[in-house]
Structure formats: C-alpha cells, structure tokens
Length: 387
Image (tube, rainbow, N blue to C red; front, side):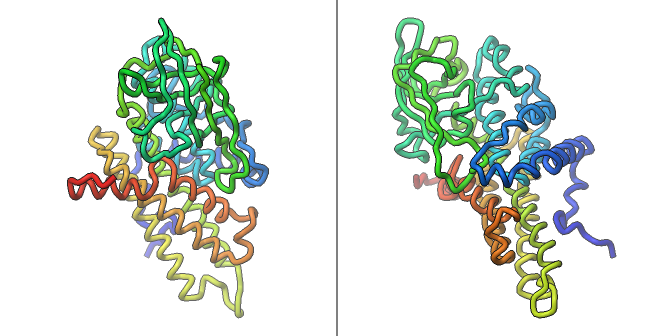
C-alpha cells in the first residue's frame, strides 16, 4: 500500500493543474530560501522584511489575479496557493500581499478610471508603489455603516476628515484607498502620502503580526482632487467587495500556517524521546496529530472548491465567510495544540508554532471577526439578520 503525504492526505495535489502546481512551487522555493531565514528575527524585532518586496514583485505576486496593467492574470486557485505558501512563512507576509493585491489594486482595477489604472497599477504590480486600505475606524470595525470619516466637495476637490485604525502597511504606503461618507454615499479616494493634512503613524507594542506594519491614519482637512476619487462605485458595496476578495485569500493562507505547525510537530514528536520512547509512539499524541490532519484536509477541500467556484464566477459571499471562519479557527487551534506538544521549546522563536499562534489571533479578528462570519452564515440559513 502506498504511503500517503501526511500534509496532503487526500492527494489534492492531483486536483491542481500543472500551472497551479508550478506557481505554488515557485512561491514555496522563495519562502524556503529567502523568507524563512529572516522571519523569526523580523518577528522578534517587530520589523517587516521590506527587502523581500522586489522579489515578491518579480514573481508576479502583486495583483496576481488581475488582468492587464502589468498584472499576471492568474486564476483564483493560483492566488489561493500563493496565499497559502506566503502564510506558511508568516501571516504578516501574506497580509502585505493581500492588502496590496485585493484591497488596493483590486478597487483601482474594478472601480477606477482608465487614467487611474494606467497611473497606479503597473507601478503597484512592480512593487514601486505600495498601498494601504482605510476602512476600519478607531470606534469599531464590525459596523462600517457607522463610518465617521467624511468628505465634502469644495469646488473640483474633496476635503477629507477622519481617522482609520489597524491599517496594514500604513506608514510604508505611497497611497491609501480611503473610504469616506459623502452626501452621495460612501465613496473611495486615492489619498497620496504627500497630501497636506494626511498622517500615518505606526502602532507599537503588538504581540501579533509583529513582522507586519500596522498603522493609524489621520486626515485633517486633506484636499483630494476629484481625479483621485474612484468613480465606479458608491456605497458600502465598494469596500465590502474588496474585503470579499481579500477574505478569499485568507481562506487559503491559514492552511499554510497550519501545515507549517503540523510538519514541525511531526518532526519534533518523532525525534523527542520521553520515558524511553518517541513522543510520536504515544496514543494521545497520535490522536492529536490525526485530528490536525483531519482539520487541515477539510480546510484544503473547502478552499479548493471555493477557488473553483470563484473561477467559474459562481462564488457567494456566504461561502467565503464559511471558509474564512472554518479555516482560520482550524489553524489557530492547531497552532495552539502544536505549541503545547513542543513543551517549553514551543514558546521560543526557534520553532514556528508560537509565532503562527500569535499571528492567527489577528487573522481570526480582521476582515470579519469569527462571530461576524458565523452570523453571515446564520443569516443565510434563517433569512433573519441578527447583526
């Protein structure tokens, strides 16, 4: 009887096309050779490894699922596999690519004017212009309809006032996609970093996503030209559609984190001897490892099916919510359990479990908390909105 891959018990590799496997493997090589050697030290120092950006761009990972304007035009499954491999390294690395691609390039590509697309997208795909996404505000993130940031017309310009919170890449970004309330509903604006009155400030003393830039944005009578307003959308549909793109990638990313933790636990329990036998020979350990493999396999099946639905143009936001809820919870539980299996060693950055565990505490909260996604599914089942 053939030996199964412990990290792919259902041979899902066979369900991928040759191109999808090639893309996954090229990102995996980059992660193993370039990102992994840096990431523990970056996490310890609270530093984003921005020296990796040129190679990330050269691999075509920025805006990879968009067509034209220097973007790779890959399918949804390929983008998911990219997210999986990046988060196998660190959630902060995947978050950077996710924000640049799904939250900044996607709205310009989908809702922007042709001039905006031509000006920004090629430079963003090349990593020469970085973006951030301003939706969440200091008073709360789960209720975007209660947005306080506002913009009013002043001749041919807009005057923007307000603040945004928990913004990935805020202080390293050249532009911010900012959503603000106006007399005509919620509008999106491309705010350039040198606009007077715009300030970005880093959030420090984080115990999660330490290898990522997290910022606050402040707008004090910032004058934004009409040419920088995204003309193709009005209302919350704009920012929520961007989040749905990013959440799709998040359904894949934590699978990579969970795989990294399981592989480490398998290696550790095979080598570690206790009471004259390897840890892996104990029933309690095998039951825990088997449960991890079960949950990872379920998540892999969910995301692959979701990706095929997305590529067919048939994906529903509730399906994304179900996968985000299931897969992030899966990865967080596995990271915690792997940390425990490693004993005292598990609290050090010599091993990956504690870093993934801490990072996933943020991933389970941002872009829709676990409870919000549970309620999205509940609404779909019952027809009643319980928000």
